[in-house]
Length: 178
Picture (cartoon, rainbow, N blue to C red):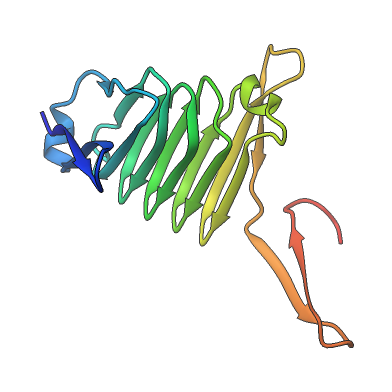
């Protein structure tokens, strides 16, 4: 198994699950479970699930989750204290069954974040920051809890310098008129 617990920077616990190539991913038939404690971070890196999607389950509360340089990986987690960060990845699905205050998506294509009612109940609700991304969707439960609503994250921003010399920016939402 490619998962180890290590200590980094003193007593900061980090679970690593990394370096799974396409061939090794074909051998993974069941979800990979990472059992954490509240003060532990999970790092998922260099997983290539293009031939067989790799699913990672994090069934307990953890401090943070980082997904870096992964392809076709799904993460199912409970509560995350600080943030989930997705970087340099493709075709990522993340399902939060508990709550997470911040999701940060950078240089990533085709990411779907399934948020729970607990995420929406936070004040403010879960914040999703994205930069250099395409195809990011936030899926939330409807008010009656019977269905889900897909919310695409805007990819286009119109910026200009106004007559007073101040930078102005406007988010362009697909399907909406100016």
